[in-house]
Image: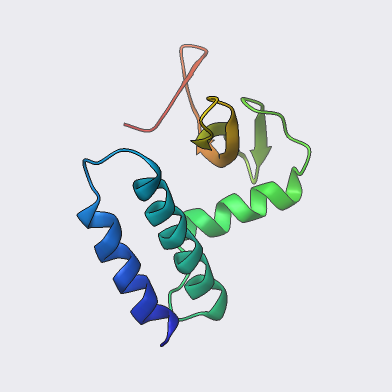
Length: 113
């Protein structure tokens, strides 16, 4: 069975668990994320421009702290981390990293509307 077929099955399983809580939803989400990543590595699904930009920023600024603002090609970006999953003791077990483009408005930084 190919990655695309497995991805479709994982997506259907994830959607069937929508609105439910517990380990079933976490396992379904993890399986879908893994298969989506594999499909992008193997190239049946292309990376988005945002994913490519995030990868480039992470390579250029590998030691950037959370909430740190950096500049690349004249554009400012903020490094943001958020928890993806936690264990039963409420300890974060995995984190998501995202680079957010920031706009200067009266010296305050905001997301693009």
